[in-house]
Image 1 (cartoon, rainbow, N blue to C red):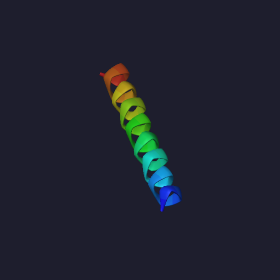
Image 2: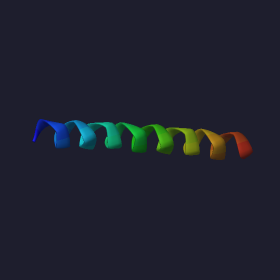
Image 3: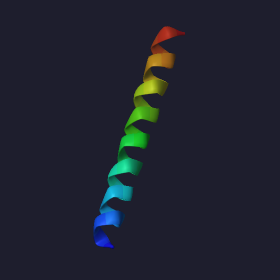
Length: 30
């Protein structure tokens, strides 16, 4: 069960990182 929780946490981190990098890309374009 903790394995699944760890995967969920990693996934959430990746999503946040991707959201931040996407936001930075958009900000630098405009």
